[in-house]
Length: 221
Image 1 (cartoon, rainbow, N blue to C red):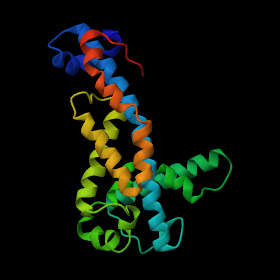
Image 2 (image 1 turned 60 degrees about the horizontal axis):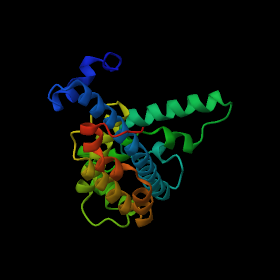
Image 3 (image 1 turned 120 degrees about the horizontal axis):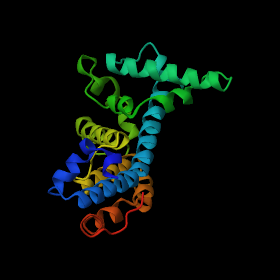
Image 4 (image 1 turned 90 degrees about the vertical axis):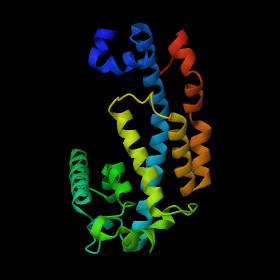
């Protein structure tokens, strides 16, 4: 198994386990398990965030494909992400012999794009262009600054990407990551937070880390 995983990939686990090869494999396996547990949690949050923001953008610009409205202000990174999403959506639609619709583009836009709309926006001033006039309504249960919300959402985006690329997450404060997911979900609606929290396997996986890594307690992913 160590050869299958590869020495470079196992090295951070081996270092954390003081060179104990068997324990490193157990830590690696637990890392897979906790990543799998987080995937469903992040899945629900990402969908909720994008739908909440999308709804407010549609209301503001009066069209489902608001990203093509001439009044939209997007910096170069977001423009690139938008164009890639439109191209991906068109490709999928053509494969199914149908026309592309707005929902295809929404599904293709990355978490980074949605989080990017909560960023400062540089000279485009997203605070006054989007957040203050209407976008804050996507998070009706939030009391705080756009900047602080963006920090939370962006930290979850980076965390999501680590999971998606099968990176080590065992050395993070994972309970805090889980709390951030639930907190941001609650900014959209308390029911969203409850839904995630009540279905999440993360707390139980975190609770058995020591048994799994130190004593070989069975992991499941």
